[in-house]
Image (cartoon, rainbow, N blue to C red; front, top):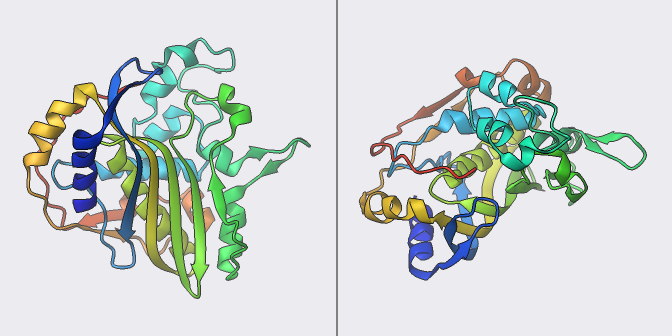
Length: 283
């Protein structure tokens, strides 16, 4: 929590105003932020200075793991986080590659599970790294990347959290996640929970111990219409201790994650929080 609050204060104190071309809104912006999560101690980085809807974050992560490309499939898992980008994004609505209502195109998990090769084949990045790590192999390239510039025109949104790199030391697994752009009041809490949960899940299905997760953000910003709520409400609240995330131990394989796992297989314990804050969302 302290890392999160320190970043928010840094943006307010040191940030520069930048107008975002996609949204047309101004953002207070800083470059380079590094956050660390103690996954080994099960200290879930869930925001406590406002209510956070952690289930939607995990549902979205499950959709990425399954390679979903439809907002409808994400809704069935328990999150509406892709509704706006799939259906209310003017540039995507005018894109001839869009296949209809709820279509997201080739974004995020599609790239992670079905990266297309020049020869017409596909690379399943996630299956490769799970297979290697399950056998104790770290080839220094255990990467899951969603960032495919050659197919940006085929999706509704470039990935913000674009690459996850897994590293193995002995029987302990580490994760470094890279994010090019971050809406700190709204998006970051989703992203924190997903980085933490991704390491926990991959460690669990590969039979490894989770270590630390390292979250690197390039462009961290607060939109102009979010600033007052952050400065005058959220930053005046005292944080509570971090909760714990419990995951169904019966989840043992990647196939489990692809087939039967639901939000009922995740529980957060000890979550105390302040009231919710209705931050504006920018499409």
